[in-house]
Length: 145
Image 1 (tube, rainbow, N blue to C red):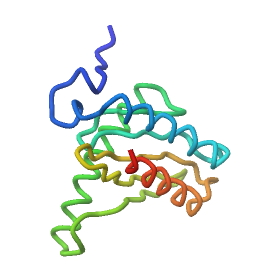
Image 2 (cartoon, rainbow, N blue to C red):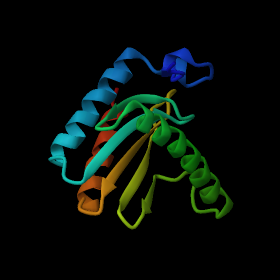
Image 3 (spheres, rainbow, N blue to C red):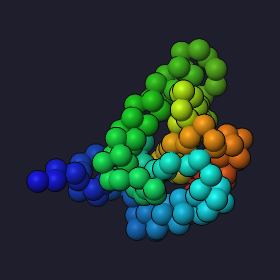
């Protein structure tokens, strides 16, 4: 039995704010993102609500997308608190985690009324600068909805 629930099936404030237009744009932008990077080193990407519910995912299983969504939400909250406690600004822009075999890059999508996150998992072969550049392009385009 699959207990996975979709974003619009769950209680909370941001899932109800994810419109069909937002979901369609998110799917399109993730496909464009992977295409622009020519797949080089990108293992998967997901756009989620800030409370960890998947809006769109590419190149990963549903289970992997759900895990990344939940982890990204928690890491994002820690980033916000770190910035606030260190008096380092009003909010963080992005977080990069480097491991022995790759990267996780999380960036805020400050869409009015429905803030989201873009999270990307990439291998060491990925060109991090290019990945960040195109990820920020996704964020800019998502905020134009």
